[in-house]
Amino acid sequence: MFLRSQKGQGLAEYALILALIAILAIVALAFMSGAINGALSKVGSSI
Image 1 (cartoon, one colour):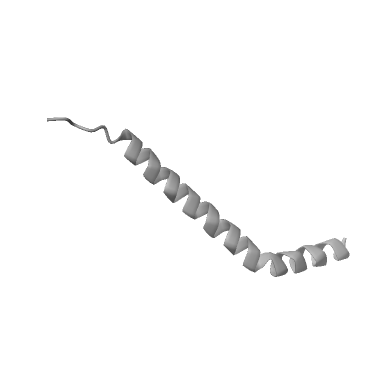
Image 2: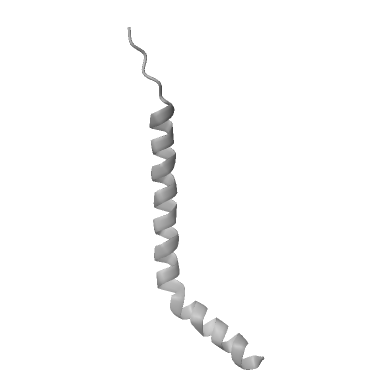
């Protein structure tokens, strides 16, 4: 019987999870950019 190593499979799964988290973070920042910009403008004008 040939046993296949699962190291490569595990690494690919971690890479997919990391890519999904990165995409979700980018989408969240894109949707919240207006609110973040407004808050930073308030802080900047009060200084």
